[in-house]
Amino acid sequence: MFTEFLRRLYLTIVMDLQRGAVIFVGDGKGGDALIPFWKRLKRSGAQTEAVATDMGPAYISAVHANLPEATLVFDHFHIIRLFNEKLTKLRRDLQQEAENGLGKPVLKGIRWLLLKNPDNLDDARDERQRLDEALKLNEPLATAYYMKEELRNIWHQPDKASAQNALDERVKKAATSSVNMLKQFSKTLAAHRSGILAYFDFDGLSTGPLEGTNNKIKMLHKMAYGFRDIEFFKLKIMALHETKYVLVG
Image (cartoon, rainbow, N blue to C red):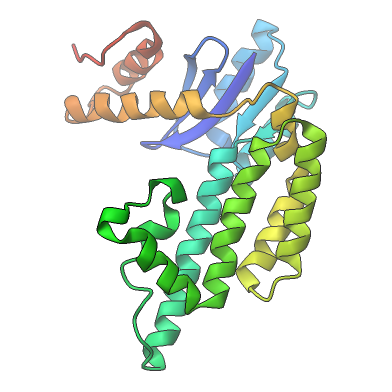
């Protein structure tokens, strides 16, 4: 059985990624929300081989404590998302420095361009040109941006050995960079190395299926204008995998 944890709407969702079914909905977020689930799992005698999750310390600790034999797989979408958050902060800090120095505000309005997949940049709107201009005028931002694309390439490697080499190269490159944000992120990557590479041990296991379910949960909540009966809302979430469309009733 594969499970994945994600925090949304102040609920903690556990999904069986093989069946695509939500098997637990906990109140709140963090490790405490999972206490009833661990009790239920222990009673059932189910065997859990791997857990896909983000790098949240609370979830990591909870898995280690309750499923010591399971392999942690750190979701690659969350890793890229975390890097994007760091990249956005770096851009903001650099923009502030430029404004304080009365420099040209070329970094304004490029936040979403930095986060976009390069293949999706719209040339008709001069998005690629605007991004290139900003990167040419700011070396730290350019270094971090291109590192993001190199990082994404790790999960496109043909096998675990190749991915390991690619990851180690990125960690070394980031650690020796002059950009503090990259130095710090290299430590994060190194500390979670085994869980990142475990992706290749479980046929590309990720939290992708839960992302789709999470969107359905948000739509369900919006259509109902907020459920007053939280237990009824939980039942609706548990039944989502059996319905083609999100209906409230």
